[in-house]
Image 1 (tube, rainbow, N blue to C red):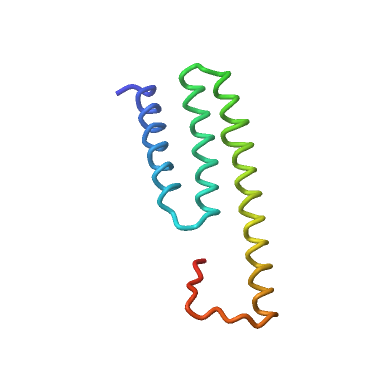
Image 2 (cartoon, rainbow, N blue to C red):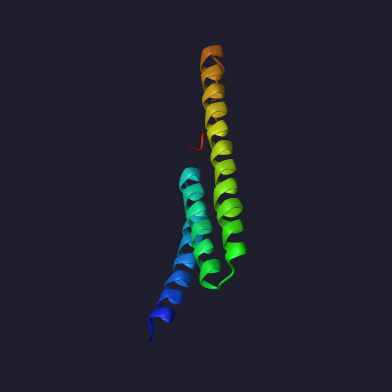
Length: 102
């Protein structure tokens, strides 16, 4: 088994493992970080295939821009959820029977 085949197999198995972990985790932030890592690994795959233009686009758009947008949305959601919880507590609204999923 030569070194190039070993590198290709490692990249392929790493892509599958990261994709599975990103989809199966229960924490949103962990999923976002794993998704960005998957995009960076996809960049390496495209570079390994010799498609440098696609690799640059994947790094910029797939990992960079999309990751930043997902983190911004997650941050805003966390802020809105905390603000809503604080408003409920100050107004004395009862939340009996409502399940809160962290």
